[in-house]
Amino acid sequence: MKKSALQIARAAYQPKLPEALKGPVAVKEGAPTQSVGDQDKIKELFPNTYGMPVIEFVKGEAKQYPSYNVGVILSGGQAPGGHNVISGLFDGVKATNPDNKLYGFILGPGGLVDHKYMELTADIIDEYRNTGGFDIIGSGRTKLEKVDQFESGIQILRELGIKALVIIGGDDSNTNACVLAEYYAAKKYGVQVIGCPKTIDGDLKNEQIETSFGFDTACKTYSELIGNIQRDCNSARKYWHFIKLMGRSASHIALECALQTQPNICLISEEVEAKAMSLDDIVTQIANAVALRAEEGNNFGTVLVPEGLIEFIPAIKSLIKDLNEVLATPKAKTVAREKLIDYIKKHITKENLATFNSLPTEVSTQLALDRDPHGNVQVSLIETEKLLSGLVEEKLEEMAAEGKYKGKFASQHHFFGYEGRCAAPSNYDADYCYSLGYNAAQLIASGKTGYMSIVKNTTAPASEWIAGGVPITMMMNIERRNGEDKPVIRKALVELDGAPFKYFAAHRDEWAKETCYVYPGPIQYFGPTEVCDQPTKTLQLEQQK
Image (cartoon, rainbow, N blue to C red; front, top):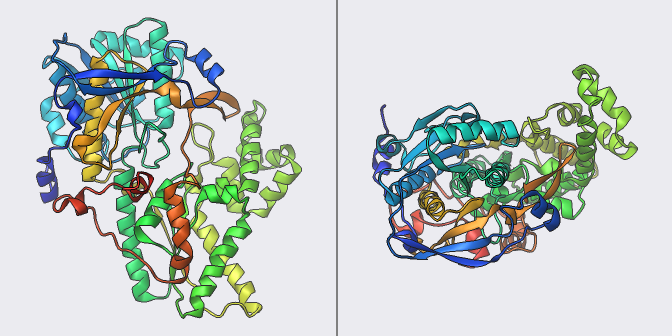
């Protein structure tokens, strides 16, 4: 396979490890934990994996370990650094005992259920070190939640002599890992399950998990593109660019990209919900900024829009919740697609019907009919950026008629999503992911199950990073999903009283009026550490570094 010059040079990069993982480790245990919500229910559902302590690895004494095999699964959407998690896991497993083997299950959790796998040898691993993508074994979105899936899995795990399974995924995938760990513990099957925190959306984070892997690289990739657009915008001076960014459940990507590039407008979904803003409120906010800049002769600008914005507008959120309940009923599932809209209108509340009818037809249709396998609205298909620019144009026409606007408005639209999911990992993600994988191997060697691999203090040099594990049950609560109450890992939303948002809020009025664009440029892999090894602005502000 032909490789680029960067691929060849990048293959030689040796990721950095926390000092505690360089050699034998010992386990330092903290106090027993409890879940973030619904403690009694979560404890009842996970009696074998609830209440375990957070652990930290410290320097230990050399031990002899018997040989055993490990399995690994990539689950859900791609995120930069997945290959380095597997590389770190491989090196950690081999460091424990050179006779150990690592097996990868093909195309996600479905590979475990369907017994599709491959042994990951040193030759294969070396081809994928420091590369983007999940193509070493592929990924999938099969949910592990049924007994027959667990039993099918244990058959192949026993056949391959696999002692532990590592699931690399986001909040839903790690929820599945927790359920699987509990099932195998309850059955005394002797198989450990370890999770790794992945998602470019950045919503798998808490007091123990500083950031999910891939977030750093994805945001740097998007910020380069936004910077390029802003440079073009400032050159042509005739377009307003509406840029939608990935982030269905939280606005971490939009906020981070705003901190890196300083656009004129950045909408934060969590703020829209907290302030109970309507769609018209949002449109008016943007239109006022357009008019303000037009007064200075600046008929151009940039607007960042989180992918999930529409779900955070309270009236639309209420509508979606109502739709979810109606569509989850057995009766609704028997209604022909062409008759479903009429069925919905008869079964949602009067207030939600008014909201439904107020939306453009294409948007209301997508809310009602386009669902993912989990029954969720496919917000990425809703062209929120075009919806907003169209409504802003209408608002500006009204303002012009009232003598409140004397500019020219033309728009361009972009959606940055897939562009960032498989980028070659930044030095931060290359190091962080390798450490997460190596650390997972230590959790396995220490006999842990139902834990997530964690690495903290990552704004410090890598040698000072803190490695360990957190019980997955600690992050869980009960939420309503597809008409049912289910135990899930609580998503982390943008905190409006947090340092990153406060910094943004303190500067956004200036950015809206003036042209304060920053142009980050492409990710740098070689050169001064202040250029190549910087963590996200979000992490720096959260840790005041």
